[in-house]
Image (cartoon, rainbow, N blue to C red):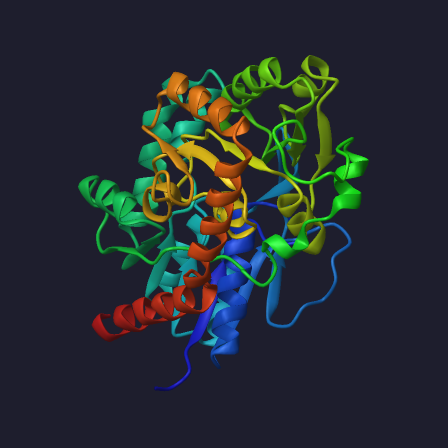
Length: 380
């Protein structure tokens, strides 16, 4: 089959740290490795360096997320790039002003256009006291995806939800995890000692509980706080480690000065933080997938989470993790405290978790995504 020419348009991309940026980079790199030309349009970043087949537009900072920028709808530049580069297809990653401009530019250029649904922005409004905005945001999201020939999502559950909302041709392609990067061999006893844990091995007293992700209200951080408080009540030597940044950081630091705040981490450093912990607590109900969950599983951590998004697909409850009925906070806390007090079970779940993730590399996801794009082109 002939190589494709694909133009990706996104409001976020590494070195920005979030799941959408990471997923977009993995897809771009995977498609290029398979011989395709992939161009990228994104907002200009600080300390910008020239990158191959990349075009940037001006952006505006997002309130409470200073590391991210909202791409301005530079319709003329998008049309120029499409005219000069002649892509076979345009894929819109995000639903901001830049994404909308890309949809209109692609349609005006008579190019097929597809989209990705990565974030439940409509659910976020409720976490910021803006429930009245939810129908408007949902309408904004759905209107964009209805203008695309296909929308790619991580799970069949989400595909069914969006299809029921009238979005056409929704395809579940999954998400991958880099098991060479995230694995138990990254465990670092010196790092644990830095956190105040002696190198005496894994036992009930030497316990590091971990959360990784954006420190923001939509991540249901209060549940993690409650779960760790219950764990600390039975094991005062347990420590809580937060990896990430966000608008809730200052509140968490003020409320829990005894907790460890490691800030945002990437690459080998992030992988070492995962593998050097013992118990991953993830209570978010706003995920479309949850890349951090797959990274924790691959790193050999025992996990307590809600049974939805990635967990519904990847976790076999009691075998390679603990998955609680979504929204049952009491059961979540009970499971967390039980697991915190049982090192043998944590070890068994962690070993099974790491082994189970070996079949979920990015290569299969990229191939599935490529096949979906080819199918759109065939029927355009």
